[in-house]
Amino acid sequence: MSVQSIHFDADTEVLTILDQTLLPQEERYVEVLTLEQAEQAIKSLQVRGAPAIAYFGAFVLAKEASRLQDNPYFHLQLNQVGQRLIATRPTAVNLQHVIESLLRLNVGEDFEQIAKAIKQRAIEIFEQDVATYRTIGEHALTVLPAGGNVLTICNAGAIATSRYGTALAPFYVGKERGIPFRVFASETRPLLQGARLTVWELDRADIDVTLITDNMAAWTIQTKQIDAIIVGADRITRTGHTANKIGTLQLAILAKHYGIPFYVAAPHSTFDLEADDTIQIEERDAHEVTHIGGHPTALVGITVFNPAFDVTPPELITGLITETGVLEPTESVIVEHVGGNTYV
Image (cartoon, rainbow, N blue to C red):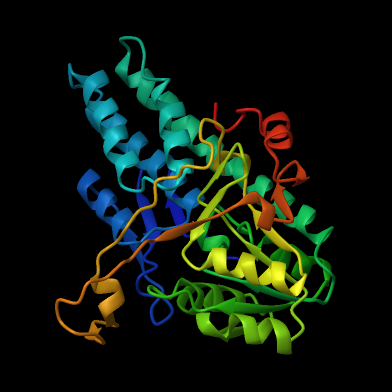
C-alpha cells in the first residue's frame, strides 16, 4: 500500500507532513505550525514533489486564512501569504496554480466565510487528485509492457502526490491488478531522492526495485534490457518542453539512442499553457554537491553549478501520460486536451 505524506485534519486544522529528509532511516511526521516553518519545509525538501507541494501550500493557506479572519487587512495579508508560498519553488507550477485558484476566493467582507471556502476547496482538490493519479497509472499500463523492466529517476511516487504518484503510479496500480514490473531507480544525485525515497516506498509496497547510480544508466539500459523509461515533471509548457529533476534530459537522450520509449507522467495541473520553451530553473546551494551526508567530498570554495532541474524537449518524449490519456507532446494536442483546466 502506498504511503500518504501529508495529513490535514479539517476540524482541528492540524497539518502534519512526512519529513522526507529523514528517509529511509526514520519515518517521522512533523506538525507544521507557522508560515515560516511551512516555507522552510518546502525549501529544505521536508515536503517535496510538485503535486504534494501544491496540496501542502493549499492547506497552509487555509490555516493562514483562519488565523487572519479577524484581521482588518485580511485580503492584503492573505494575498501576501500566497505569494510567499509560490516563491518557495519557482520551477514547479502546480503550487502556483493551486494558490492562485484559492486566492480567487479571497473576495467579499465575510472573512470567516472566505476562510471556510478556501479550506473546503483545498480539501476537495486533494481528494479529487487521488482519483487523478490512479487514472494516470491506468493509462500508463496501456503503454508499458506488462512484466517489463522500467527505469525511472528521482521520486514521482505516492509521497510526492496525494497517493499513487505519477511516474510510479503504474507500478502501484499494476501491483493491485497482479501485473508485475521490475523497476530500476536512479539514485538521483545530489540529494538522492531516488535512492532514499523511491527505493524506500517501492520496497515498502513489495514492488521489485533495483537501485543504480546515475552514471550507470546507459550500461543498465543496454545490459538489463530496459523496455521503457518513465519520469514525472514539475512543469510542462504548451510546446511540450518538460522540466524535471536534473538528470532527466540525459535519460531522454539515452532512450532515443537505444530506441526505447520515454514517457512523462503528470496531471493537467503540471501544465503551464502560458509558457513555451522557457522555464525558470532553480539553482540550489553548492553544499548539496560538495557534501554527502554532511561530509565534505570536494575542495573548500570550489565553484559549483547546481541546477535542480533540466528541460527535455518534446522531440525526445514518446508521450505525456495524463489523467485524460497518453498525449503526443505537441502544442496542438496539449492545448486541445489540457485547455487551461488545471485548478479552478
